[in-house]
Image (cartoon, rainbow, N blue to C red):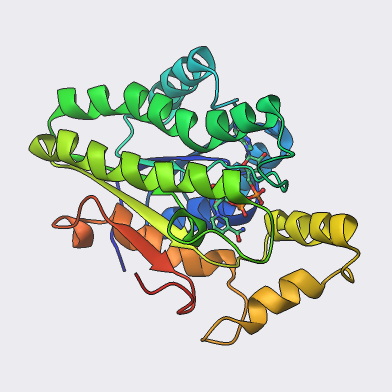
Length: 262
Ligand SMILES: NC(=O)c1ccc[n+]([C@@H]2O[C@H](COP(=O)([O-])OP(=O)(O)OC[C@H]3O[C@@H](n4cnc5c(N)ncnc54)[C@H](O)[C@@H]3O)[C@@H](O)[C@H]2O)c1
């Protein structure tokens, strides 16, 4: 549908969840894929799945908070698979704690993974896109929380990082527009991945709410009436990775079942 044949995509945090669905969807659209994750076994397993679709794929362990590791990752990706046309900054973590309880270490971990790594990866990949002169796509994981912090769970610091992702997306879009590199962000709502299981269990531990009830409340508020699956997000990212979105840049697009409308 989106004709990504001959393109190379690097997806971070793609060993599971939304990143895995994105990597496999881009592979289905014809792209060769590099799957980077802290967890080497899961990255390699997703690469095997992508190869099963008929694409070239590399599953590789990388901590995207480390500039040196990103340098190695990009060097290995380009030598083994090819120059990167599509960068999906997807790796992210959540820490469930009110601001006044959050430690400095937790604050730094959230910012290192959720926003600094996006800058570091863009800094490693964009100059190569510019040098090739063929444009490119940088796609960042924001969140509904990047527009409206949650009232159901104490995840304000996470929301702060996701607001930063949207600011970064807009500012980088201006800088890279002259090079025909589109920079956009996706803003999912309640996606059924281990991240939401963590939110639910942490709220249960902190408040005594019955396990499953926080996630159930969040799902009950979704206008389209169902939890989101990672493939819903991958549908949007496939579009953003394709030439169909060539005239779109600096956008933070909601994919929330109607929960977020601005
Ligand atoms: N699940 C949701 O409801 C939801 C909603 C909105 C936005 N998001 C965002 O979407 C993205 C993916 O979320 P998910 O639900 O699939 O999460 P997940 O926890 O299921 O998967 C995240 C992956 O990132 C990897 N990762 C973490 N730190 C890393 C690091 N330093 N280097 C490399 N890899 C690392 C993990 O190993 C894991 O495989 C995140 O940025 C998240 O904030 C998720």
